[in-house]
Length: 295
Picture 1 (tube, rainbow, N blue to C red):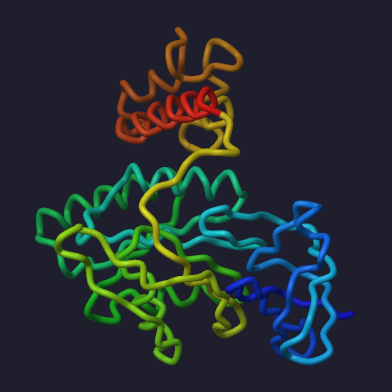
Picture 2 (picture 1 turned 90 degrees about the horizontal axis):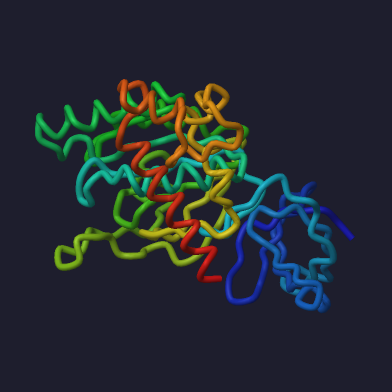
């Protein structure tokens, strides 16, 4: 038996990198995993045994520090949420959905805005204003250009000694960004579909890729998230500016929706909390409540 980390899952096989010799072994899950409702994820630290590099079994999945459902990955240090300034249009509501999921999983988020060289001056000003808003909330925001290496070195520094997941809409340039940082990766990329207005899903599976002293994951893009596993009454925890104001509310357990004496709603009225962020909170709260009633 030996210790390792799952770095890829594909067609029912798990590819485990040994902790000591760094060799990769193709493994199947232990026979009773399904009965025990254990589903190994990329990023899992595991105990395995293998007679050779293509005939191994995962015997144990060790306790996870955290995990994401979409993309399915575990034990992540930070998440790069990659959104484009244009093609597709910068979407703050979808970004806030990602941020809620990342916050709920206790993973450090880093917002990365791509394709800054493709926007007009007026569009650039709008993006910079959004960047300022998110920075003031406490998030780190990085920007880079589609056709140049502008901003790449600043992004590259974040990868060392970290396990980093890339997530965001399809077509925003996640694979292109990774290729710019390390051309040897040669990840598949694709242009935006002009008919659908969104990117094609060029990444088909989740895989951890060695980068310097860290690992990065290129993941399938997607354009929607649900809130299963997140309670409406806990949603305020995942908006830092709302979390900061909650103790000032008149009533304990204030949901910041309709209660009188709500410090959060007062902060929105005074411009201290951005109205679009609160609107997203309110929308997500209602969505979670409706989702609970359906299930």
